[in-house]
Amino acid sequence: MNIQTLEKNFISYFNAKPQFIVRAPGRVNLIGEHTDYNDGFVLPMAIDRAVWIALTVRPDHEVRVHSLDYGSDSVFSLLDLTRDKGWGEYIKGVAYELQKAGYDLKGFDAVITGDIPRGAGLSSSAAVELVTARAFSVASNFEWDAARMALLAQKAENEWVGVNCGIMDQMASAACKAGFALFLDCRSLEIQYAPLPENAAVVILDTSTRRGLVDSAYNERRSQCEEAARWFGVKALRDVVIESGKWKMENGFSEVAMKRARHIVTENARVLEALRVMKDGNVKRLGELFNASHDSLRDDFEVTNDALNIMVNCAREQSSCYGARMTGAGFGGCAVALVEKDQAEEFAAAVSASYKQKSGLSANVYVCQASEGASVLEI
Ligand code: GLA
Image 1 (tube, rainbow, N blue to C red):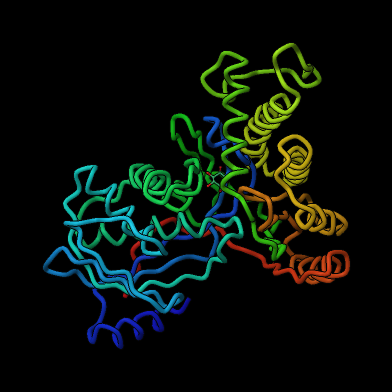
Image 2: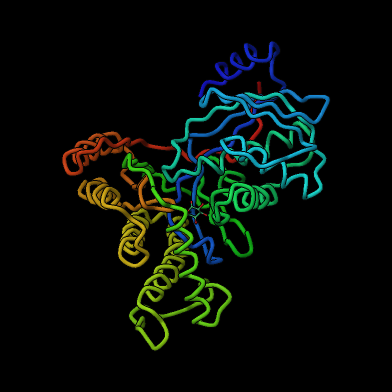
């Protein structure tokens, strides 16, 4: 997104220059899928696609936001927040949670735009939530506390919007650092910045399929994990330690719950190993962990679709590919591949062609850079 274009649009809409421009990125999860709501580990990185808000503080409690992408407005008073439908609910939900947490919010006039594809598993909703929180923090002059903002944004999504997500997407959009992936312990919210392999590129492979019925399938996975945790007698599946090869069905433990639990337990181990091998610069092993993660999501957690499996196979067929896996909630959307850096463009072209041939669908494949979490831009 070109900041000048956003500024120009703001000026033509509100007849004045904006005071601030804030930005919050989408994310691609490198590894650690469906582990966040099991108190586990994740390793996302913020991508160079984001949502931007240009704004000017108002003297009252009105919030007026014009969306360039939807061509419509969301207008409400901070003194009277009521539920409605549409994109503005993400903004209202964050305002509601911030006020409930004691923040004294000022209204603003704003223009919002973004370039994260929606429903693709790249956290466009979390980016809207975090850019909103960032906008309120500059407008109302309170300090930016990434973890606190991420938790409030998650609450807004859970309670105001009604999607029962974990904490990964909001933490990634709030707290990532350019050039690094973010290792997050979803129980303690402890973070570590993990160096990305120097000789590898992170490539996003959008299948162009979009997840359908995702909320019910997502919630079903959550309850299956909770059922499994109860069976093990632990607070969350994070607490289960089982040596590989020891998985077996026993009385009272359904095959489905066993498979779900096995994915979470093995995936948590993979994330911890991924962090170690990233620190050691072992890109080959990191690629193998990507592959193992996808296979577990396909066979045990059962959240891939045909398009994701075809895409991942197309990626793995390329000799420049270290590893590939689905990313995000699944059921459609994107995969992510780790690829030899100087081969990345050739890889993208080859995978697009072979995916088109095998699935009949057009892919959108691009190399992405690890970007900064929610931030205020210089105008
Ligand atoms: C979605 C949710 C996250 C996480 C992932 C799966 O992106 O918003 O909290 O559960 O799915 O890893």
